[in-house]
Image (tube, rainbow, N blue to C red):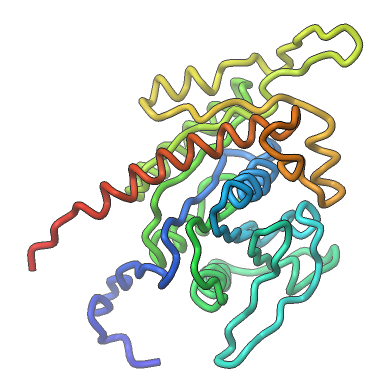
Length: 283
């Protein structure tokens, strides 16, 4: 590696983010807090996008608590090719990488910020992604280092914020919206997860977390609302078994909402990508 006097690296200025060759759109999926089902949404969206005919990659950027190996039903250690390029796992039609593939087991990852930054950069630049229409990045909960590493490394097409409708979750979702605004990443939309529960016995709809809150927050912040996902035991079971419900297809009762969200997301992402292409740089 050359010394730090390359273009854009003088005087401690971080290098400008560089596009990944062959990767069309990179979308971060975040939430202000944990426990809102962000990874469940990321995994099912990735599968839905792939089933809709897109070439899809999925990065598990939650280094401390990687859940994608379990949810995707894949624990194989990735192969490392020449030039130290890592081959992503290919499961359910999606290329994935996770620290859980490389360092499996229940031992927690203990590391400092710079190491974290290094791993995120490796997952982006050293993985053999090939040609992709979408690369989804499942962020750790909260607002922190990983997002900074991400935006410094690659230009993002946009972000998706996942929240439940509860006031506590929405308060933290607003922090996530503010965070993306601060780092100049467009929010492509909000997804309301665990929106409502339909009683399997009497079919009564029960709003456990006060349904509709995320949609109101989207309106308040003037960002698109991508849709709501019901609180359904089968969604959790699918993730636990490594067979996410989106595998059942767009016509299925369980998977339909994810395909609806995926369809709206593609519209927003296409729009954002075409707008970013319009920027004329004056040298």
